[in-house]
Image 1 (cartoon, rainbow, N blue to C red):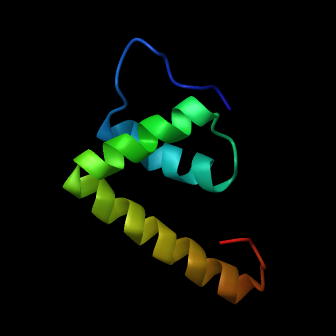
Image 2 (image 1 turned 180 degrees about the vertical axis):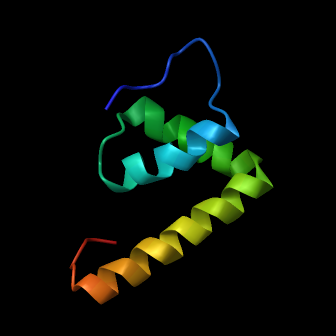
Length: 69
């Protein structure tokens, strides 16, 4: 996965794909830190991130995946 440019903060639009990338282990440490900072600062992305987490958990249960939490 291509990492984010260092010359700008991540946007809410970036967050939509970064949450999935983080779950799949595709972000480097800096990308993960930037994502977590944005989620902490943005109530909309914090809610969306929680919804993604809930969705992924439900899908894992339905598909019988034993992903580490």
